[in-house]
Amino acid sequence: MAKIISISNQKGGVGKTTTTGAIAAGYKSQGYRVLCVDLDPQSNLSFSSGAETEDCPTIYEILKGEAKTTFSIQKLPSYDVISSNILLSGIELEFTQTGREFLLKEQLSVVKDKYDYIFIDTPPALSILTVNAFTASDYIIIPMLADIFSLQGIAQLSETIERVKKYCNPNLKVEGIVLTKFNPRTILSREIKGTAELIAQQLDTSIFKSTIRSSVSIMEAQTNQQDIFNYSPKNPATMDYMDLVKELIERGI
Ligand SMILES: Nc1ncnc2c1ncn2[C@@H]1O[C@H](COP(=O)(O)OP(=O)(O)OP(=O)(O)O)[C@@H](O)[C@H]1O
Image 1 (spheres, rainbow, N blue to C red):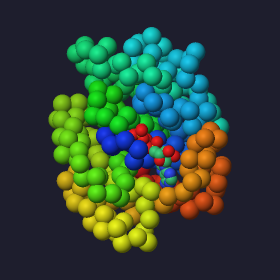
Image 2: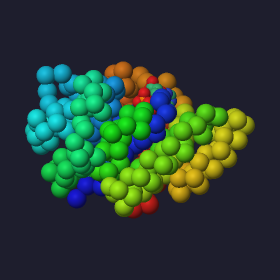
Image 3: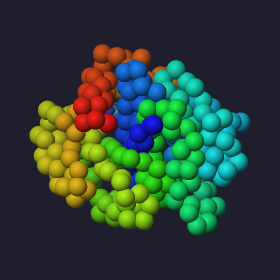
């Protein structure tokens, strides 16, 4: 039965998509069966993994009940994907029915026994899509930039998680914060780590030992629609992501 993990932060550009793709490929390289769900209307995960986004059933049709989850999975070299497209951005207005928070959970329950891990890439907003992701998940991983703006919005994120725990998913756990585009050698990055520790306390979680360094290979791999383990296995950021996967596995996740 798959463990379901949301990669989430309402702030944009913090490395949600990159982290989702990297840890999914990392787990796959360790022999696990992995599915990624692109729940972001920007569909960056779909693009970077080489998935179709037009003329195929996407997560939008699945959530609307117009496509079956099993038939919407694309089997790609790096991992299996349910793609998204821009239509997903209209969902907030389209879905007004009672129980709309549970749509993703219901749809993923059909394929849960076919995978060891299902990773969900969430949009940069605390929207109904993010609430669906949290409701369906066992764990949340929060990618965060080591910058002074990271504290902004943490109260709202914490509130959303608490509300989902109270009304939809009492077992939800924030597994940890991963610092991305992190340069351990700068004094500023080290100081910001202190701020991140405060944030972790607020969210009742911890910061992963593994931090992810900046590397141009990340964007190059995404542009070439390859995962970083294939594209640049010896790259520092690739090794950092492998350390993160090992840390997660050591934690029993
Ligand atoms: N470790 C890294 N080193 C260098 N560039 C990175 C790294 N991680 C992510 N990036 C780049 O930063 C940009 C934003 O990353 P990404 O798309 O993963 O963030 P996001 O949080 O998913 O964004 P959004 O909020 O828009 O969905 C991308 O261009 C990506 O290639």
